[in-house]
Structure formats: structure tokens, C-alpha cells
Length: 290
Image (cartoon, rainbow, N blue to C red; front, side, top):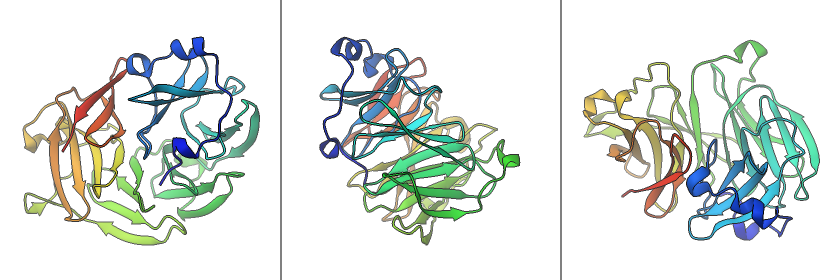
């Protein structure tokens, strides 16, 4: 799967005072994803740094990205300690020393990003599926799937979300469907769709109502994808707040798990026995999950 803290070299950190000024537990905002080792990398607008954080240790490293002249939207820190940052339709590299590196013009707006040990996958906001996997050296395209978007598709409303399994398979959810499209991670070969059953029947479609889909997260060691679903999108469940769609790939079954928090919380990922959620006003909350 993705790069781990153990695979990162030592790279310059911001001063400890700056680290103390940005505690993700109380102040995290914006985009982030939980990696396979339980770490998250948050952007701190106060210190203009990418802060690597774990629940047990807090902030363990910070990478200065102040040389970036645009606000970061999505990112990954590669095994060499360099950050690859998406902003708009451009991919920027900030080196482990905080210097600007490569700049890559992308074919469209990136709606989601995930990674494994070989590279990172960009999922574009398009009417038809388009994925690209880039390497960690120069962000060269390793493979792509689908139709490259045109400028006219910049406002496409059909929303997809992305996750990568521990075996490296790329999983995509599209629009209101609970079905997962799957692709092999090395060459991007189509593996097919995973169709789930719900209470021994067909799965209900989500009533998006113009809202974007919530994030997907691979749950390590479980063979399960978790998807954030507001209860209002599955009114037949007669539940409230944010739900987790538990998509079991081994049994092709779906169930909806209540989290006890409001719909405006965001899923960042799963740890061993709990999920990490972003509060609407900033900061983190942890919810047990089975």
C-alpha cells in the first residue's frame, strides 16, 4: 500500500514552536487521508506546513511548503520525503528541503487522490471516468484509464471517490451507485465491478440531492471499504446523522453503521477499531467501528 512513516527519511522540520501552534486534534481542517500505518498529513495554514500526525504521538514531522504560491488542496508525501501537491489543475512538487521542484499541468480538476508504494492515483472530476497513476520520481504517468477530460468538463457534477486496497487494487465509487469499479494497481487493468447485496436484496441507490459523495476508506486487514454516507441519502434506513456504508468485498455485502455524529463530519480514514472523522468546525473525532 502507501508509503509509511518508517519509509520516510529524516527531513527538515519546522521549529517546535510552529508545531505546537497546529494541533490537528483541535485545529485540523481541509483534506487529509489516513495512511496504512495510521498516520495523517494535515496542512496547517498558520505555519504553511504539511504536518505528519498520529493519534499516539501527535505531530512527528513537518514539511515547510511556504514556497508554494497557491493553497494546497490534496497531497501525498513520497518515500523520499518530497510532497506532491494538487492545487486546481496543477501538480506541484515541494522537496524535502522545502524548495520548489517539478510542476505538472494536469488535464483537469482532481476530485480524489490515493497512493501505494509505487505511486499515486489521481481521480478527475469528469462525466466519464478518468484515472491516472503517477510515479514518485518525476510524476510521470504510469498508466491511465478512461477518457481524458476536456476543458469544457471542468464543471462536471458527477462525483466519484477513490480508495486503494492493501493489495494495491484501485477501487472507485461513482455517483449514486454503491457498486465499486476495480482496477489492478500495476498496469491499471480493469478487474470488473463488485456488486453488493443489502439484507439479501439489491443495494439502494444514494439520493445525492446535488451533494458530493463522501470519502471512501480501505480498512486494513478487513477486506472492507468504508464509505461516508449522510443518512438523508438513504431515507429508507430511517436513521440520522453520518452513516458508514460497510462494503465487505469478501461477501459482497453492505450494511449501514451509525456514527452518532452529524452529517457534516467528514471521513478521513480507518484505524484498527475506529474511524477518524473531521469535525465541521475543525479538529478530529474518533468513532469505534466493527
